Length: 276
Length: 170
Image: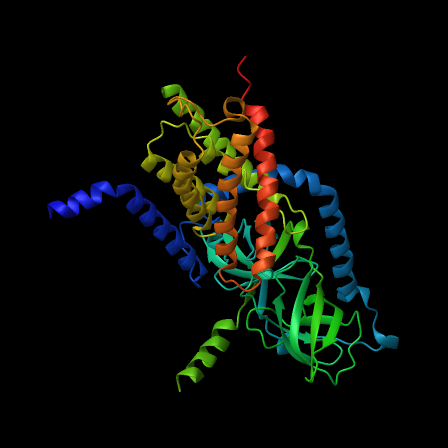
């Protein structure tokens, strides 16, 4: 016993170092888990509020750009209004939407913190459970997809960006309807990649990539990006495709959080299958 | 003594906020991420007990982690750096030893001494941080490249800050 105490007092420095280091590494490993630690992330009260104040100030610098983007989006939406379509040659068409049921609800939120230069990037939004945000909702901007909600507090949520090592987005090449999985290449915030695209497709640079119907999180047909480059792997029948992302992650300010009303039903059914 | 504590507390608050609000937003080609908050650990006075230096480095690291969603990466890197600091100080101690009340500054120990002191520790810190971020050794050299470039950048900022915060004593 005496020897043990002697050992402890003599090596307290090394032991303290080892325990702090272990604790830090434990936090890192836990952070990689699906349920990230609730305390140490940017959606907690202290850092969330500081970030919001900071973003309130810096928002003024990008007002001009944001205005332009909102105006652009207004034009786009106005173009889709029923009022902007005239009925075909006098034929009266009345559309009753009794056949349709709303399956997505959009919320708007402001980005209060954002990173693009790390290996795994996250955003913080100023909407949380009080505003109806829940875990695993999709986040999109007017330009394209942004990420998936990973952690929610009262008034903030933390979003795993597309620029994240473990992000997998089911996508479709719009022209062919060929499904694939989009992952980030980890190099810069402008590009992502798709592996194993069959090489019999006549791909062209500039082909549009949108989200596919296979995703239970993202609505179908949301813009993802365009094909910038594709390379055939020697001895293989697949292309490796580089995709230019349509979202400018450096300039995100307002985004939409998408609530898929039928998600639980779908994933519940799929989960039940897996148990068999 | 009290004066030193206040000075270091203010330095801590300033450096952590500057790091998370300004420097974390700097993006130069994805390779350069300066981490100036290590200056807090570098500048701790010599009389700081070794265990306290470890704890303070841990707090500094975990504060930066809290803002950047990085779990405990910064904490791990800073604690390791504080651990090495003790050894590095012994390794490169000047002949007459250290005066207990001093902080390690360029003005008091000269350019060469400070360069090796800060250089080694920043390299150690960035090495741990970037490899922990990558978490595997594939792409070893591209990570190493990031470590070296970012270390040089941080070192430059640390040097510049020396001339801002510590007036030469005449």
